[in-house]
Image 1: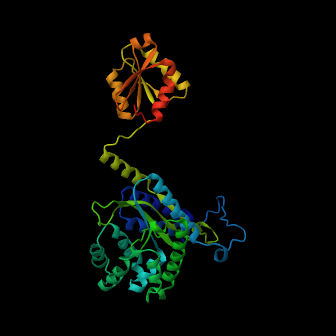
Image 2: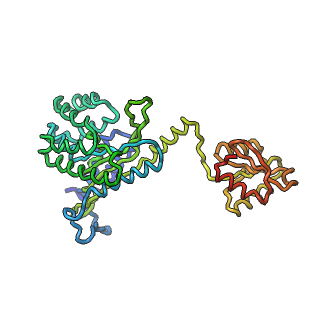
Image 3: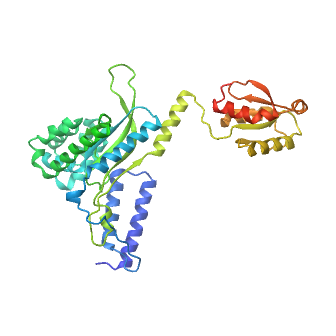
Length: 394
C-alpha cells in the first residue's frame, strides 16, 4: 500500500482534476468516472490519525429495520419541493421519481452486462433531451450494447405513471424475480401512499427513464421540471428543464465513518440559477421591468444649487423610516434623475424647486403615470407611504 503522503498527493491532484472538469463543463459521464476515482482514493487514505476524530451518531436505541420508515423523509422532501415551486408561482410543474434499485434490476433482467450498468444508465438519463432512437443508437453504436438488449430496456423506460404502474411492475414476471427491483418497487408503493396523505400524489410521476447520473444514490431519486402550457387544446405539455432534484444516499456518509456504519440520508437541491434564468426570460418576454432597489422615493432637484435642500429632505425621510436616496452629483439634470428612477424601478420622485420651497410644498411625481401633485412638506411621509402601499397607482 502506498504511503500516506503519496495518497494525499494523489487525492489532491484528483480533486483538482474533478474541479477542472466541472469548470470546463465536461460530460457528466466523464465527471462521474473521475469522482468515483476520487472517492476510491479517499477510501484508501482512510482517517487521518493526527487530526481530531469525529463520530457519527444516531439516536439511542435507533433500529432502522424496526423503528425507521425510510419513505417518510423521502415523501417530506417531495412535499417541500412542491411547496417551494408553488410559492414561486413559476407555472405548472411535475416531479418525476424512480429508484436506483429498480434501474439496476431492470438492467439485469434486460441482459445488460454488469460492467456497462453505469454507462447505460447515463444514456437512459438523456431521454428527457433525446429521442429513444438516438438514445438506443448511443447504447448500441457507441457503447457496444446488443440491439435486442436495448429494445428490452426501451420497453421499460418508455413507461411512466403513478402507483398503478408500480403495482403493474410488481407483477412483471421478470422484475418481480429480481431482489433489487422488488425492494425498490415496494418502497415506491409505500412512498405513493404517503404522497397521497400529503395531498401531492397528482404532482408525482413514476418515470422509469429517470436515471440521475451520480453514482452515490442508493434508493429513491427524483427530479422536478417546469411544464409549458400547451398552445392548443389536446397538445402535450412540454418540459422546460429541471429546477430541483435529489434522492436517497444511504451509503455516502458512512464512507467517512472509520467503523463504516450505515447512516440513512436523503436530500434535495433547488436549481436557483435555473429558476432565476426562467424568471428573467419570462420578464423579458412580457417586457416587465425588474426592480433592482427597495427605494421608495428619489429626492430630486428641478434647478441647480439645491444640493443642501436635497440632503436635508433625504435625512428627514430616513428619520421617518422612508427608504429614500438621491444622486450624488451636485447639480444633476432633472431628466437624468427621472431616467434613473425608470431604470431602477423607484416608484416616486420628490422634486424640490425654488418655487416649491417658497410655497412650502414638495412636488411628488409618480414615475409610472408621470402624474405630479403638490404635497405639503409635513404631509409628505404619509403620502409616500400611501402611494407605495398601493404600488404607485397614482
